[in-house]
Length: 162
Image 1: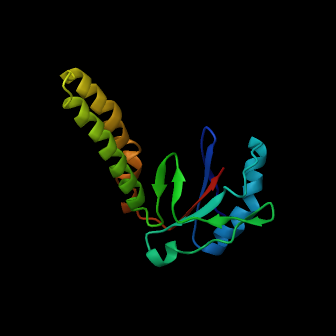
Image 2: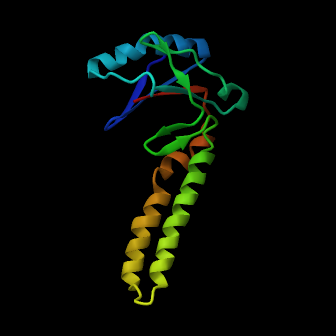
């Protein structure tokens, strides 16, 4: 019987589950989500709670789960966002990396403007600004998305509760 692993950070919660078949996942999640939330006194919103399937085989990653919570069917979302990291179904993180590239471009433009002003910014100020604005955003969650898509996975499911 699969076991639900909880990932909790402040008010963001993910329940992860890995199993051999989709029906096993659907049964386990439907039966155990309420049991998982009860000891923590959590009351997730069914309108914000979504399911996502992560699989390295594209045809299997598109599967939509039939998971119910408080007698309502949970929505399926192919792009799960947890702690600002957008995960796609094949764990390639393309959506997250595209968003990060746009964010870094805007921040880099700020540094360029600081370096090109008539009053000038010292090298120390530019370095600190670059580290604070650009490097922190570029490295955020790098250990997660840098190698995760190369791990040999069976079916992995994450339910995001809000």
